[in-house]
Image (cartoon, rainbow, N blue to C red; front, side, top):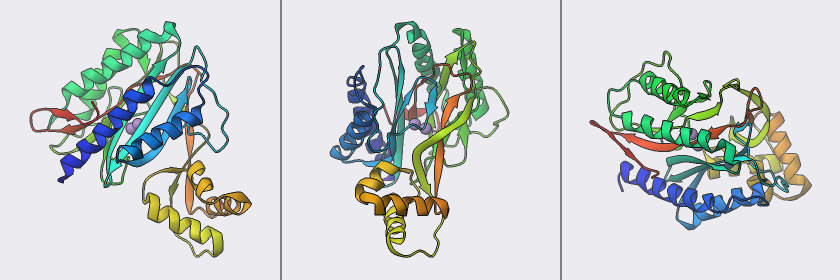
Length: 296
Ligand code: MN
Ligand code: MN
């Protein structure tokens, strides 16, 4: 399989999982069941998990992943973002959908989907990332909402979710031009016009990544070797590790890896004014004269 085929295989799996989970997110469902369902469907369909499934409710824009024993439950009136990462041999598909359980917020969700559609249509070799950002901002503001300015889309590369270059969600100075064959996740976020339109770092997300190797002994050593072998440079969550290394010994080893900075923790990203956030995301391949969406 060539590289592009692998991206499309990952995208097809991610899209199937997204369309299925959309029908299952309802009041009374637990966040942890959504995470586990997404992760198990991904494996069943032959994909690898590129990052733990995010279930981001209301003002949480990104990076909420259920820990072991999470009791967080979906409720009527919420905006629920499910963000899914699938890989095939390291080639990643990144896609997200907002499930709207508050009819009053439906126009904001529709707007973020439209902004994504408009942005994707601009993609071709030679287009400036800042021009896409300007169009996203314009589309969202035109409909009476606001984009989140400090979250961006991003380039994907093999086993790397954020591969340097970005696609902003506002006009600005990101002047790099898209190149043929590059793969990007494009992901606008919308908030109400009276919200700040920025995110701040919140509580730990339960998402981690390998940082560096250190001389270790015993359980922490085994755990770090497992992380490197299993997840490489991809993000992982505490729920997976503590299932694989159960009991107090696992908890101790995990905390040792954190304090010795062998692994690092990502924060949740929270809308500064506490307002509800909607998100839409697709992965696209840049072509000479256009684009192909891998996750549709
Ligand atoms: Mn995503
Ligand atoms: Mn993304």
